[in-house]
Length: 465
Image 1 (cartoon, rainbow, N blue to C red):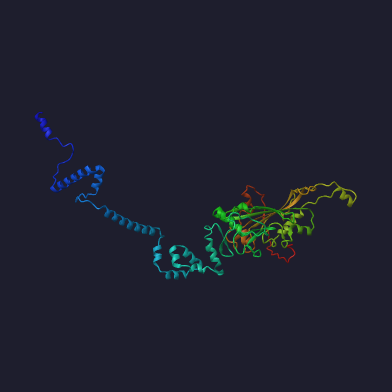
Image 2 (cartoon, helix red, strand yellow):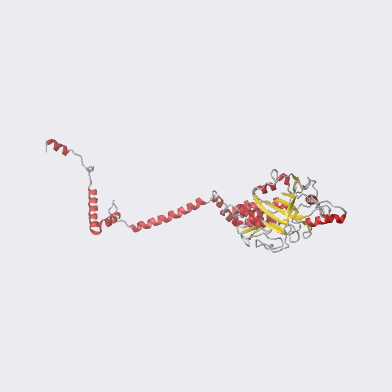
């Protein structure tokens, strides 16, 4: 090795990169002790025991730690922190300002509630659990009794969506349990058909709120409730709309009826088509027997609102019957009357009505529209005279939203409240709205008032009959 190689070797840097540092005596003593412990642990239990054993040795003092005390300390700290965190999370879930509400005494909240109405005090108690605990049962006790029925109904209606198996009774002021949830079916008037377990349901003399469809059939308000609840909330809250559709025939006359319904913008619309075969040149007594039912105190067979006596509805029907052309006599009948005859001709089956009975009529006091027509139809039960004239009276009505039977369109149709139909129904007629939902368009008609002179007919007058 040359002299230059010796010099380069002497000044060559350390490959490990560790610098030489000064180690005092204490560090040398601890290092020696660690080495001895490591050798003992390796010889006794191998590498894994050595690592576990070394974890229990304090690096500064070299003493073995007590893991039992350490675990107990961790357990105490964890339980304390868990309780505090649970308390904090519960406080975070409380609505804003609830702690301030809870800080006020019961007497102060009772004093505040004394300045509120019965309904507002009940709303205040329902706003939070804290206020319910502060106010107690006093807001509920104030809503008992018949004098607080209106406020109680307003409060109960807010719970309508949460009670699908019950139905709000506006006469008892409570929620009744539905007897057949989802299986309610509309039946004739003379059949007892309770849909809730109401103490008044089985009393036939009790005048339950219902509207007349036609002779022998009515629509109770509870069925309107069920249909609108199913539309408003879910099918479990009521019944489908198609369950109200009906077809029937009066057993004591030739009148046939067909009722259908449609929901438009939260309102229940009803259409009832009434038909009956008729003849030409009927005397006045036959016309009355055709139009009026003696079983229902001489109410019309066809569907009509509560204001049918006040207007020209019956005059329009009588006028339409007078336009049916007469059938010419046969040759034998003519020879019995006088010598000579003319060949009989079948009259024109298409009947043209006049300007009085042709237009569509609207009741000015309720949302109801009428259309009277004379049609040519087939009578399969009479083989001798197969085709006859038919009088058809179609009624369209808006029965309201099904919330409260004492106000709105439902009460107006039954004649219980005042209603300006021409002011409320502005552009589209009820008939056009109903017929457009099935894609059927009826010919345009003038819409005139059913009672243009605003007369009030009573049963004592002669004109109504």
